[in-house]
Length: 103
Image 1 (cartoon, rainbow, N blue to C red):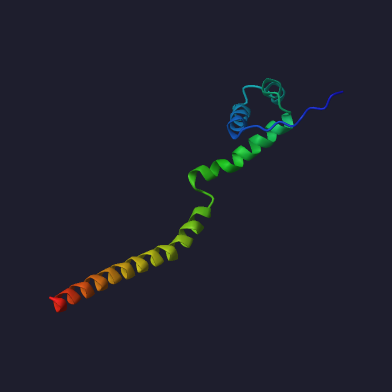
Image 2: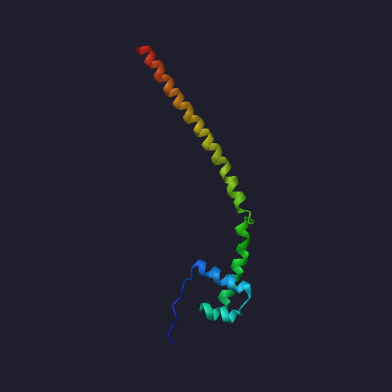
């Protein structure tokens, strides 16, 4: 008996199989034979697909945490922009006053 090597399936393939399982047009055995995977694997992909479906519409709440983390960063960017503008103004005003005293 030869041992089969493990196959890795793409996420697109897994989604395709999970959607076919959700349709329930065919039995798990028929789908397993059609896609050449074990019925348990199809059940697992179907479960994962259903669990992650809510994340597509932003229901996980993780996005809110990421937005809260960005707030201090945006404040820092604003502060640095003001500092840059001030230093540019200060440098230009010093050049102008130096040119006036030399002339």
